[in-house]
Amino acid sequence: MADNRSFLHNKTLTRRRFLQISGLSATALGLSACTAATLPAAQENSRMAAAASPGAAAAVPAQLEFRLTARQTELPILPGAATQVLSYTGELIQGNPDAVTALPGSYLGPVVRVQRGDQMRVHVRNELSAPTTVHWHGLIVPPGAEDGHPAFPVAPGDELEIAFEVQNRPGAYWFHPHPHGLTAEQAYYGLAGLVIVSDAEEAALNLPAGAQDIPLVIQDRRFDGNNQLQYIAGGMAGMMDQMMGVLGDRILVNGQPEMTLPVATQPYRLRLLNGSNARIYKLAWEDGTPMTVIGADGGLLAAPLTLPYVMLAPGERVEVWADFAQQTVGSTVKLVSLAFEGVEAGMMGMMMGETGLANGAAFEVMTFAVNEAATSTLVLPARLLPVETLAASAAVNATAPRPFVFAMDDAMNWTINGRTFVMDEVAEDEKVRFGDTEIWELANLMAPPAAASGGMGGMAGMDHGQMQEGNGAMEGMAMGGGMAMQGGMRDFMAHPVHLHGIQFQVLGREVDDAQRVGWESVREGLVDQGWKDTVLLMPGERVRVIMRFEHYRGVYLIHCHNLEHEDSGMMRNFAIV
Ligand code: C2O
Ligand code: CU
Ligand code: CU
Image (cartoon, rainbow, N blue to C red; front, side):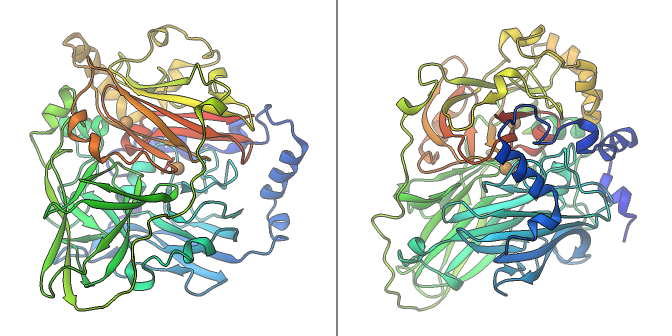
C-alpha cells in the first residue's frame, strides 16, 4: 500500500495549506456556537455545555450508539488490482443489531437505520492521516461538532463523541466529511454513508420494505491504469478540475461499476442519492416510462409525483417507486442519465467538455435484471405523509427575500454575495432570528452583486489576504485568471446550493432571460415538492426558498455542494441568533 500521506494529500494539498488546516481548532478560532456572542439564551448555553461534555451527554440514554471510524483501506472495484479508498466502518455499541449495516463489497456505508425520536450517540474515530469531521447532511442536529462544522476538526488518531435526537421526517439522509479544504478529496476517495429514518406513520403506508427497499448511491470516478482513483490532475486539466468540479468517466452505484441489481416482478422503493462531487444526473427509465417520485431530500412527499425524468444534483436525494410487475422474467430495465445543457455554461466548461464524460452527457447508470416472478399486494398510496406548507405570508421578509448570489468574482473565485468562506466570520446580513420564518432568494448569476467588488456592507473584519490564503489550490489560477478575465472568460455554471441545520421548501423559480442557459433541458425534472436541503440553481436562475429557524441557535453553513466549489470557498457561515 502506498504511503498514507501522499495517497491522501495527492497533489492538491500543499504542505503550507495542510499545516494551516491541521492547526485549526475551534478555540483558536474563537468560533464555537457558544462564543457566538449572539447566543444569549441560558438554555442554549447549557445545551452546549452538555454537548461539550461527554459525561453529560452520557446521561441521556441512547437507542443507538455506534463507533464510526474513517480509515484507509483497499478493496476490489475493477477487475485486477484492488483500489485504495477511504471508508467508514460502523461498529454497534448499543441498540438494534440491524441498525448499522455495511454495504457489502463497497467503500460506501454504513447504512444506519433509525426511528424518528431516537437518541443517537456516535463515536467519530479518525484513523486518517488528515483532520476530518462528520456532517449529517439533511439531519437537524445541534451546531458545531455535531454538525461536523470545519471549525471542530477531529485530529488523526482522535475520537469525538457526539449525541443528538433524530428529529427528521421519514426519509434518506446521509453523512460525509466536512473538514476545511479537504471535503471534496475525502468524499471522492470514498467517505460517505446513509441514515434511513422511519416512523410508525410511514410503516402504516405499507411501502416496499426489507429487500425491496434499496439505497442507491450514484457517483462518478476516474481510475488510472492501475485501478487507482484519480483525483485532481496536474497542469491545465487540474486547474479545470478545481474550477469546474471533478468529474469521473466511470459511473458507480453503491461503489460498483456497471451495477446490475437482480429484482423480482414487484414494486421497489429506490432511495437515490447523488454522492458525486460535481456531476448532475438527469435520471430516466431507458424505455421512456415516467418516474414515480415519492420522496425528496427531507423525506416522503404528500403524494406521488410523476415526472418524465428527475434531476439529481450533488447532495440531493429522491425516492422512486419502481414497479417491475409488468416486466417479464429474464428482461432488463435500465436507469439512464439523459443529455442536458447548461451545467457548464462558461468558457472553462466548453473546454472541459472536450475531454472525458462531460457534465450533461448521456450514459447508462445501472441495470435492473428481472430474474424472478413474484406476486405482491403492495399498491402505490395516493397520499403519502402530510407536508406542512410554509406560507410566504408567514415570512418576516415576505416582501424582501434575503438574497444569496452565487457567482464567480473578477479574481475567478466562486463566491456567495461576493464573499468566500472565512472560518470564524458571520456577516450582519448572514444572521437570522431564532423562531423567524424567512424567504431566501438563491440566485445563480453571471457576476456577484456590484457592491462586492469594493468593501461591502457587513464585511467589516474581512481580510482579503486571509481569504485567499486558505486556498492553495486556487493560487495558480488567480494569476491566469487576470488574463482570462480580460478575454471575458468569467465562468458560469450550475450550483447545487445546500443549507445545514434546516429543511426548506421551494416557493418558486424565475429564470433571467438574458442569463439562462440550458434551463429548458432540465426544468421538467426539478423536484421542488416537499422538504429540501439542497436545491439546484441552473445558470440564470433565482430560486425562492422558505424556512423556519426553530430548532437550534448557532452557526451553520450555506454552500455549493459541488464539493470543489465548497472547498475553494463557495461557502459561508450563517447564524441563527
Ligand atoms: Cu452534504 Cu455541508 O454538506
Ligand atoms: Cu449538509
Ligand atoms: Cu458551485
